[in-house]
Image (cartoon, one colour):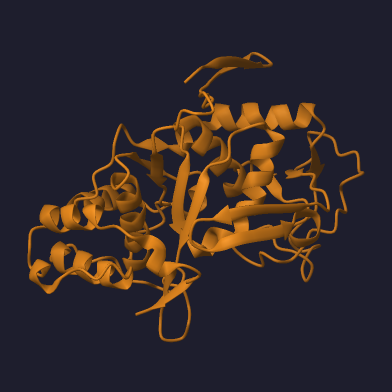
Length: 323
């Protein structure tokens, strides 16, 4: 793996691009990246387990990243809860924990690179002015398209503004290991999306691209709730000349009403009192068919079986699992 030093204004950023001979296969590096907005629920634990098994079954690294940039949503004590829960279920990560909040300079450096290439613009539109057209929230109204109001405006830096990425009406396709071929038209389906919010917080879509690059992640296993966001991230990778990881999106757990388990739907924290039973149940949900004799075994024995027998293909084209 080579290294290059990119200087942005007075800021020097150490980058670690993945470089290899075409015939040399890179070692697997995966990750789990929870947000500290509350304790892990069953849905997030299922994603963590799938990501862990996919990495370990390939003798790969499994990294832990804490996505803590969205400070208004962070809850005190959540990081400790997340670490303790993963530990209780035997999902032990490699290397030190990566915290987004420690990499602000890296995001700003890559943002400057996009600005220098005239791929971004300032946007001072308010939420109120965009009501009915688009939401600035990364997690709501995902299919509303920003109409490009500020694309050709000259907005001064001292005016409160967000930073948007210019997109083009081009087709972008990628192959997901479970969900198959996914094709989007960036301009028509996503529009000019936000890289840095008006409150100064780096947007998820941008941060995750930089984070995966800096951590050397080359395989991303995560929930299908992020499948539709992946083309944006690949587009950013292309504009920044960064490598694109392999993607595998596992189904999300939904309740009896079809809603994804989440903190927004008041999903309860995972019970850590019987981790072996919970892990067994999750393996059943992941269609791994664990044998009954593993019921009640120790966590490390159950995980050892799961690593040796991990076969995600039974989840092909499945985007949701009912409890």
